[in-house]
Amino acid sequence: MNAEEIGRVLDEIATLLELKGENPFRVRAYQNAAQALRGLTEEIGAVIAEGRLREIRGIGPDLADRITKLATTGKLDAYDQLKAEVPPGLLEMVQLPGLGPKRVKAIHDALGVATIGELEYACRENRLAKLEGFGQKSQQKVLDAIEHRRRYSDRHLYHHARAAADAVTEVLGAQPGLIRAEVAGSLRRNRETIGDIDVVASADAEARDAIMAAFVGMPEVAEVIEHGDTRSRVGLESGINVDLRLVADRQYPYALAYFTGSKQHNIVLRQRAIDRRLRLNEYGLFRVGKDSAEAEAGDLVECRDEEELYRALDLAYIPPELREDMGEFDAAEKGTLPRLVEPADIKGILHVHTDASDGANTLEQMAAAAQAMGASYLGICDHSQSAAYAGGLTPDRVRRQWDQIDRLNELLDGLVVLKGIESDIRGDGSLDYDDALMRGFDFVIASIHSKLKMTEDEATRRILTALDHPAVTILGHPTGRLLLAREGYPLDMQAVIDRAAERGVAIELNASPHRLDLDWTWCRKARAKGVRIAINPDAHAVRELAVTEIGVAVGRKGWLEAADVLNALPYDEFRAAIRRRG
Ligand code: DGT
Ligand code: CA
Ligand code: CA
Ligand code: ZN
Image (tube, rainbow, N blue to C red; front, side, top):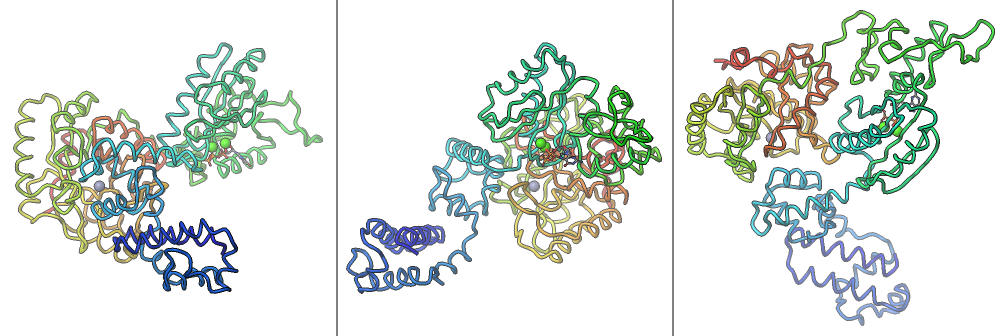
């Protein structure tokens, strides 16, 4: 290592020590040594060889020893050990403007936050603002910094991509000569994370240049990566790339189907075409002549839309969400495709926090918002007492909230507010209040929020124990994952589903775009076992109630019908479904 590289290691050691809360003099010693090395005008190797390291101001015997090790071997045990002791996410957090090691340590100690993704989530739950020495302003600053950083990442959360795509289709829709335009790709398939946005559009031939020019000239465009007649690609300010394909209108259904994907789905479609002596690509579906493998323009099987295209291949229309080659062809042949749940099917909103715990709005505000959305029931689920970092409710405060809810219900017309709780599942799988209090809730969501480092066995046992508790109605965000930020704890999900089925417990599809947990691939398996899914916004503010729609989008991807969704039940049936078990 040269002096500069060694300096960087010493600086990092200083940061790691500070994150551990070590003696500030030791921290300062490393920083000073790093500084001195950076000012060195000769080769570090020569200085060491001639034994002059300790002549440098601020470098004592200990540091001289360490610098020598780094210079000669490039390694230092003490450094490796420190790195092993401090979660790597903390070092990333230190990089955020406005957050030095001291503040990161304070956040880590108080909130248990160990990655940038968790930090963002804590901010969204308004937890940083409530921390001593922080407040609303610095929370916003941290959020802005995380947002800025995200621009350089290569996958994007669904809601960011959706918002960006809506802006693009709005611009396109306003262009003269445009005929049809739609989002394709993974976003149309409602994947929970998106690589890039794909848009397919059709237009009159003479309008295409102007449309392409408008696309690359959108105010959100930071960079034009490609500008062609039929295909352009831009990078948006938000860091998301967008592909636009512009075709003649007769090609539109084929192009839309092709660019919707998935690749695996397309491969099966193409094979079905071949089996019918047809050829399918992004330009059309062609009859293949006896002697010519090459299709001619005149041989097009005309399809005006995707429905006709699927019919031409002897299939019922497959909704884009299901196009993953995960059984949709079989169902489309047999006519057993699900009637997918829709936003309008949702009757109740469960899992809503108020300012009693870590929400930003009052009970009354959340109720008014739910009513405005047309909900017929609203489940209030603040945090339970173990979640002290989130203002979890003591038993006394629970009872006070119940009174408040009773009074509110007397005033409300058309909306019933239910007494729920998001009870922590403690380390041993027990719930967070005694059984007497537990009995008083209308329904209970049980979630894990702490001690996330578990083996699959431990996590599974902890959750199975919780599911056995007769008060539990819904298992909350079952894996604890934060998309693009934190893996969920490993879990035997089939065992969890089986137990939930046995106990009549529903599983949450947490609709927060950061979670979307239960994963869609498991929704179908839960449904197959008769386990109901609760599509819950986990809203910490009025504006977050809207994420329910994202949950519905992903639930559709998981083959859910309205009957599979707990909160799509009308109020009376919902009441019956959540009756306490014993
Ligand atoms: P992403 O962007 O990584 O979230 O995922 P997609 O599915 O949007 O993938 P993307 O943007 O690379 O391509 C959009 C669609 O275009 C893809 O879903 C299927 C189609 N496509 C792209 N390349 C190929 C290919 O090599 N073969 C086939 N069969 N289809 C392709
Ligand atoms: Ca894409
Ligand atoms: Ca693409
Ligand atoms: Zn939770």
